[in-house]
Image (tube, rainbow, N blue to C red):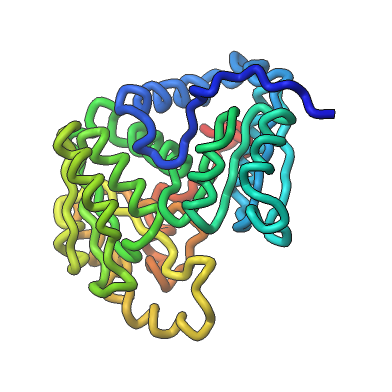
Length: 313
């Protein structure tokens, strides 16, 4: 039986990081730090709430983090794969989200196309959370800027230079730029030239508007050293997104190799620069093993004695 929806039509969605105001962005980072420090205080905040997780693209970390988070906060997460039953094919997206709005409290969707997320958000009467599309990755940015704040200080974003090297026509790159600018940082990205690699004009236009409003800056380079010089954070992402065919891989390696993060490239950043990769990562591709496994990397940390996977130390 469908339950009657009494939710406001003014519901808020998260389709890209810039859907948030800078104040809300900072508030969420502050809240996340508090939750991490005292998880038991939030053990019932999602009591009797249900999250539906729609997956068109696979992900280990996205599913585990969302489902674990709902469980630890007293709620319930449902996994549903739409890979074999695409949104908008068997029935309209509108019909789907109107039904879901009466069944669950929140929908998280990890999909191929930005149009699908936008249509869901336009029609849904419950919050839609974008867990990745081809235009944005806002939840990744909340996690990334939280850890940058932990390492560099939450009051220091305006002093930071964040460098990204690799595939710039990329959902992670786009939201890394948007998010850093909103927090007042300088985000410098470096990648190859060409129609298949250039940042979309709509993103450049939005970043210019965000910079004018919030004081952050962005730079676009086609030389990795230019982006990384004096950087506080060096970030990269996979060269091989899910849609890349095997036939394209060899050419992409050749194209992106000048933007590989090596120890020599890291040395152009500040001495205390940190290295990040949102994962999955391939050693010898977007970064060398000595970088991702080295002392500047914060990609993964080995637990100290007495720590567990559920209790970071």
